[in-house]
Image (cartoon, rainbow, N blue to C red; front, side, top):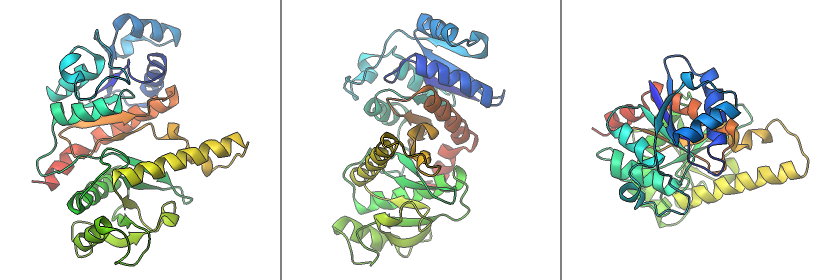
Length: 312
């Protein structure tokens, strides 16, 4: 298994990516090769700085960098030898099994669709986030930003994608799937949620338990919470803001510490033909390490292939 990381992506490149890769190398099994994509001298300098051994990695030199200000749809053609685009080309050619980056999120989504392509039958790929529960488990919420506007059939597919992710990665045998809404009653919500509820309520594709109010998203009411990307992103950013506020006030709490994004590393793009993981642009070494560990779990459990089987 080969997992490649874009060393030049993110606000703290290359050091955060290199230090995270070094820590991931200690944790991942020998069967997993970590491939470093980026400027070769920058990689070697950073490995030396962090006491890393170049022989423990495969290094593929690239000459370009995709910045956070680059137009997502244009980087594929305008920066073909950048670390980000090279990662997608290697993934599409089957030379690596997973590609991870903390770089330009829009470019990562564009590359996933334009180079890797959407699984036939999937209307829109999406991204997810984990919500910690007090029982030690995590709920899954999707979408959290890649699709601000959705139609009912798109939300229905998000439920299918979230259901398989919760089974393979989060360990739920029969995930409880809920639709985020302003009330539990079937007739509550806007036209989108009302229509989506009608599609979901009699399905055999997943275990639909009905509408979920936002007050229950951190409890065991539902294991998978479905919503449009606009709503999901608002919830995700609010949770991040609350965590920062709690830390600023000097409050130490075992449960609230689970809201630290560094613990999760990133999110796979669900609904594309291979394994792509997006990390936070401000990722530290710890976050990058966890992004690579997640990359290994997603690849080992053949998440993309299992989703393809569902949409045949």
